[in-house]
Amino acid sequence: MKVAVLYGGTSGEREVSLSTGQGIIKALKNKGHEVTGIDFSPKRISEVLQLDVDLVFIGLHGRYGEDGRIQGLLDMLEIPYVGSGVLASALAMDKAKSKQIFSSNGIQTANSKTYDVSNSDWHKGIQEDVKKSFSLPFVIKPNQEGSTLGLTIVKEENQIAEAIKTAAKSDSIILVEDYVGGREVTVPVVGHKGSERALPVIEIIPKNDYYDFDSKYKPGGSEHIVPAKVDSSLTDQLQREAVLAHQLLGCDVYSRVDFIINENNQPIILEVNTLPGMTPTSLFPDSAQEIGWSYDDLIQKFVELSVAGKKQKV
Image (spheres, rainbow, N blue to C red):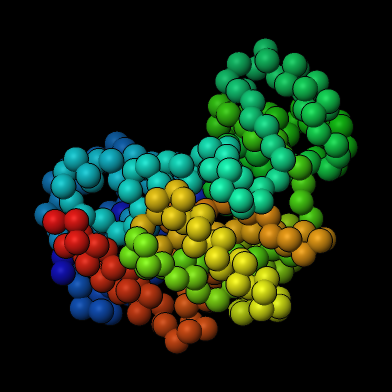
């Protein structure tokens, strides 16, 4: 097939996307596809408009890639692509909206509140409301951003102002939520709509205090335990809730669902990643390896599911 890979982008996750894109391009070539790589930017949209391919593989992360915008463009151009559509992508990217959907369907989330920080004159009032609404420690982060960019774990009140300012650099809406300590796990999900399966649960042991950008993407930044050392009933619950979260948002082909297992051994959902990292140190490929899928096999699986799904729609 003729496949275009969009990677790079303009978000704070550009460097990760460059690595993801190179991995995907290599895997597709290894599987015999004719591949065109595009380091995407909205300023170079003409390259997408002129595409003559059978399929687009989106290797972008963050804004313009993971938020539904590029998916909308490809839909209008009637070019099939790998992964979730416009609405599922946008919902997953909007942490507050997705948390509302999860909690109303029985998936436990951390208590949270959103604030509009587009006007710096409002920040003082927001600080006061945060102090009244949350007990230390708590988390302040952009509502729509990935890879923990702009996130602060607030342990002292004098950190609030700076944490708001940091999060506001990435988004006009910030999310403040209770800090949930515990074991960090993630569950990859793959399959056609309605018949998805969860892959083995991965436990993440970061070298830093929490699973931050460096822990995710620097070699040796974290240890991945696959399968996670949790009992069978908790494993079943994590996998069941991961598939449910994927389905509730309307995700397609693949996603990765992040949880914290709290001190009471209960899973608290963090977010759904519709375009999880596919770098050499990424989590999804590690889990796939556990069931015998190589990196190349995994990428090919996504292509086959996407093509089959397109035929079903027609």
